[in-house]
Length: 114
Length: 115
Image (cartoon, rainbow over all chains, first blue to last red; front, side):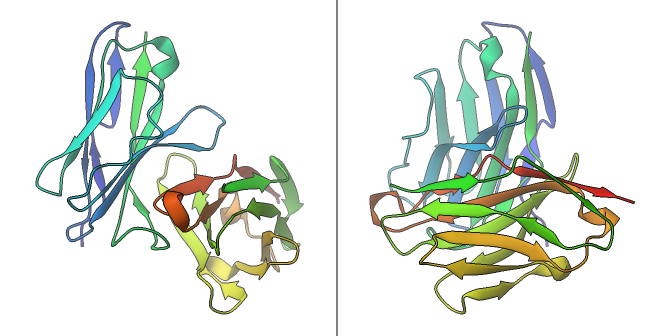
């Protein structure tokens, strides 16, 4: 079956512009996570969605970052007024439920802010 | 609070020799522990997971890890390294409580396999 997909695979933007990154989770997975991976670093948790519950936004680095998940499926991560330090690979993962279930990762979106 | 420490940022082994990637965790609750692998330009893939069943966990590609509560460790091992094992490895903890939804990743260990 299809895995987690993300689009675009690469995004180059100018400082100050807004960007939207998309994630399509595995069908039936109720939990969806966004992470950021900077060069040579581990994964930094950004935000988590579980079913219809309010998302856990505790990892968002600033109010320029926001995310939504429509219909419990597709999710969009939006970064407003991008800065050079936002350059990273943004990874999306989904899992059957929260907690100790395996997370299945997408291939990521590489964001470069010039 | 939950956290993970991967004790080595880089490990280099010769092909055919054992692999040991070290991981220590901190958790206020009974944790679930995972090892993920990331090959160059590839997505993250689950190697194995511990979720309070057997303490010795076997994963894919001949890897295994042992959960040692007394040492708060979850080291990853493989008896004989293969060239295809060269990759970045991440130890991950997920725990209950108010942060049970989150996965905490270590900073990664880069494994080099020398022919």
